[in-house]
Length: 512
Image (cartoon, rainbow, N blue to C red):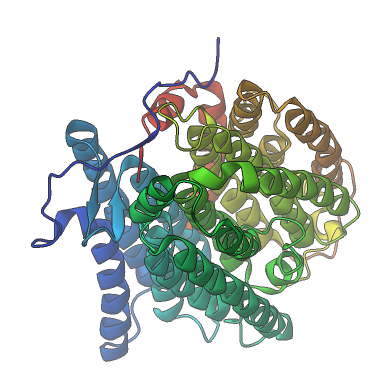
């Protein structure tokens, strides 16, 4: 029996005309975005005008705001299920279950990272509302990316997300590594954004519009008389920009240094919410906006998937720093997600969109929890030290529950059965097999075996090696304990009982 039993009507579908977009704005449909932006402004303004808040209140406020936005997204999901998808703000944003799934994933990342960051920031110059406000702003930008129905709007969301990430990566003013990671991310991210913006310009020149629905109609109406050369050049530049944001090889070169130098909770947020937003944008642009060119860009996605799987798996196993290990592991996971994107490419623009889109979104949600839990353990164990593998020696004797939770996350990332990671990897591989991408599916399975050695190294270090008797005691803050415990429980429960999430992901619709 298929783990991803596919619902036939999961394709890009035309928006219903429930809302007169030219004359009215449906504010409740925008409520998750409004809550995030309003909450960020509230944190900054009230935090600046009042004395320092009691311990944990900044993090609680950030988590409450993001949680409220996530709940509103669930309410909107129910409305979309009843009445169908639509477009908002004169066609600038898509109001569909694809956007709501991305919103829930990103808001969940904010909640977990806020809990991790609370104790991590105490006693530092950043112990204030600014970091949490930046998390909320980045989340709003990521949701705009995943919801955008216009390339210009998508670019605005991308820049909002990116600028917040640049500041967050360099936010530890006591660390030269943090400043270096922020500078590297800013310089390389600026180049990637330039590629993406130039790609938008070329696609606009070829189609006459930046609106995704109008782009599809323009290409369909012109037949073979259009300027395909201009469009293909624009698509290539768009893929370069998006490839950087998802950390797909060979555009991954920023990830190891930035992940290592940035504060660990920030790294967790970039690896989870950043990927969810970037892959959401990639599906919007390629699957919804450019299905007529799928025969041209699908081989590029295939190559990026293979490179990401191979490079991420092989380079991860030769690292000594655990944050760099997880950075290259993130590249490998990007390769797995690209397997799902490549599967979706085969059916782009068709009535039955296959299993690709649902498998990608399910992977992003499950990976979000796993990777935040993983970096949460790293933040607790190696807060004031370099996250070298030796720091984790003997962790099972010092903190057996913490070592057990990290073991669960590592097994899930390896794709071991009865964990959520197995469900995620099985889903994208099954999606690839369903469209006869056997070669890519085989490469993905082989790379999973290679990457398993990486996770085994860390587990052996925790359970088999003796730790330093003079090492400082490990203190687990309450917020971090709750976040890590929830992530571990979710990873196991989702692996044992995946049917609810699978059924939910099967209901994803992508408006065009």
